[in-house]
Length: 241
Image (cartoon, rainbow, N blue to C red; front, side, top):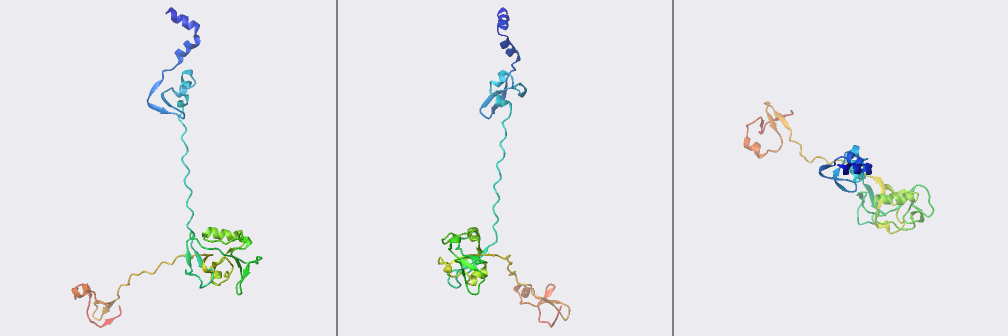
């Protein structure tokens, strides 16, 4: 007893801590903190006490929940097909057709106004080129539609139209593309649904005695049923229903 009084007199700060320090609670399981894992924790209101701050004080506050990952960017729209046509009519092994924007074809450009060095064919209202300085001074092979369109825009021109290509307005403009399919800027029209292949039902006429008679070719079922049922097969003079 005397020893305790002496200790209190000599070390008052330690005595105060021994009285104020709360009992640490053991958790049901370890608590994962931002920098460590704690088996004990103090109440949040007691985090300023020395006995708590020295033992994984970051456990007094839950770790911040990381933000959810950003959703992936939406896929670009597929876009309508564009027409590709032979660089010179009748010279290509492939037929002119509609092409998906991701396909790779050759590039020729058309301009509605004169550009030095570009060619204008008789009967055409545009100037065309394949490899002039405005196009980087080089041929452009195997480009998708976006690449082809950018090449012509950077040259101060545009992709030729379907009519211009098929009218040979870009023929002979270089790079051997007279035998290649060339991108045009002509966009596909809306697809027309194919006609229905289902055959229409045979017409029904009315006999002179008022009975309904099927006028189409006889089916095996009708031949089997004979005169039974509301519809009858028989050689009867017909009038329009």
